[in-house]
Length: 284
Image 1 (cartoon, one colour):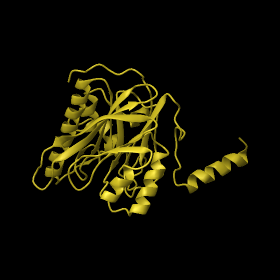
Image 2 (tube, rainbow, N blue to C red):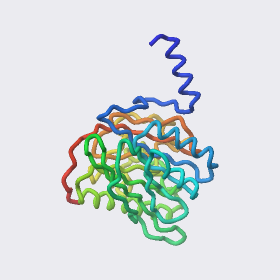
Image 3 (cartoon, rainbow, N blue to C red):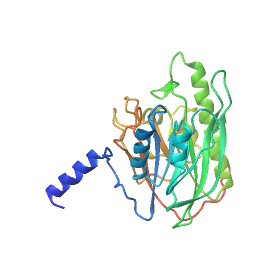
């Protein structure tokens, strides 16, 4: 490619609002691209649909958070993409997938935290998908954990109730992961808005936070495929760091935050090799 051609290609990518680093937008046949994107719940329908369309070009399967209207849900259920979201409450957190790549074989809502005062019960969306080409099955869990509870890998002072609720969500998510592993027959992927900076969590390693709790079930963050997580980087648009995450038993081949804004978040996209062999049940 000539220098001029490279410049033109770069301009086109930036103009489209999806400038990325890391892996190319199209994955190889033996790879799967897994993402998570929280688009602000008050984003207008036209702008929201545009952001979803751009995300779809970069992923094969993803979790969305704060899908807050029937019109948005109808959009996700139409066309060449599948969508599943059955979490109760004001906002659904659906999993979406490219029907050309995956077929759905099951789904449920898993309660991860009970109601605590004014804070409602919290749920993970759980979808089981089969990769059409390889037969590999995935159990994808999508979550949206409470904000304002954790900062720099520890409890935010003065927010005891929110922190207690956050811990309950993390513990409940770990139980849901264990349930899916116990069933066997699928690689477990966890995606979502964790509202906690993974760069700090993996250093602090507090027993009640995701790095330790999910790590106890053999899951590693896609961000851990990078030796360094520079301060000021990550998926937050407001300086909160690496708050959106993808977890798997595999180390990610690549991980990147797209320069596509959902308001307070950029999407995170991780690329994994397709294993092609479904795991046996794993004891909790």
